Length: 168
Length: 349
Image (cartoon, rainbow over all chains, first blue to last red; front, top):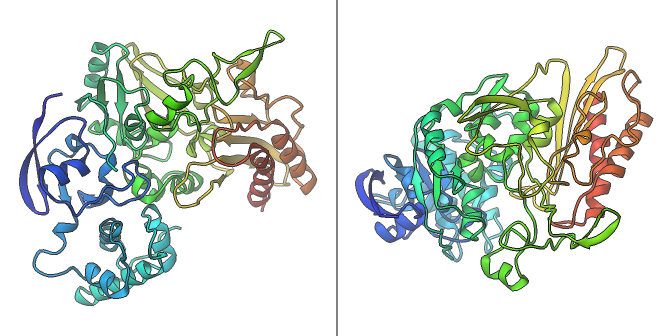
């Protein structure tokens, strides 16, 4: 069970970390790279707190082995605000989409991946897409409002064609 | 709370052959890993962990998708968005777990889900206090502690009744899909309904080292199919009941073929084949289910409300949900018929 050096891109930086085969990505990010913005909630895939983007897809880092991410490009919550707060983070703060804050990193990362492929989601789509993230403080309405506000801000910054409605 | 994974060695083959060669060297002490959304939570609870894990995530052969063949490594997110597969398959894929889990989870993993039970899917501490169960570390079943054998009531130390909680399995079984398994001795293809064995521990007709590579769908043109899922929360839960149907209707509204798949009641997805060609129950690998016993005649009859009710009543009567997943068996039994009725009414129109 020797540790092995893994190369990956984390938040645009090439890093090399030593991981054991049974280390999950969530633990590797927090313990080896000190990126403690990624939270571990249930550690069983139920709560969505540990969501990070792996090659552009929002995935659960608690159910992904670090070794499986060798060579992958990973974005964590720390990667969103390089010099200033990301519109999503700002919207979460302004709309009250975050109370204790434990789930917030997961929500922001999932929303970030969602807005990249669907810049103008409906409320129904939001509910479907954020179904894997749990928040026990806010009651979700403010979170949906925050994502909608961030979405409209991001659309103004980079105007795009409205996405075609998906099948569901 | 961080849960520790047991120690294991991870292997990352890039071809099927390489994976099979690796598996051969490990005897029984290995597990295949694909998405990891089912295996890793079980490992974290200390459930039947192995010393070697062979990752199938880097094998490109498993990720092909076409209207008739779906690779086992296709992730559920891609399946749900696919325009090529039948609409009912895409819809059912979209009902599984949460979007985050579907991003990693694969078709093969969903069809080969480990069976679930109140007394099994628990932490090591929880299970230790009860004295373990048949499926992990123990020698008695807590769901059905006494069982009839040769006319006598004996302690159940031989039959695990953990529930197979896949959403796609009942639908694909109803559609008449077949699966391809690659093993050291070559590949073989068998009907998906025959792949499942009525035992919560030895769940599949799978020889040592074999890899589930793809699902093949028969010609589904003219077949109307659908799926209904019952779960405590729509957003994430495993099904506690799933009813799928594949219905072939003639021009005059008469039934040409009807297959109903019932999920999350037994250790297998139970198949009701009303045309009687696929006799799952007669192979004797289902423990309690007898879907063909007293099965009404429906082929060639007009699918009116009365016939739908007859079919629904048959499903209710023969469904055998166990008290090992959330929700009362009596309620799930009743809902099996209700879902069958609603589904057939929808498919008819």
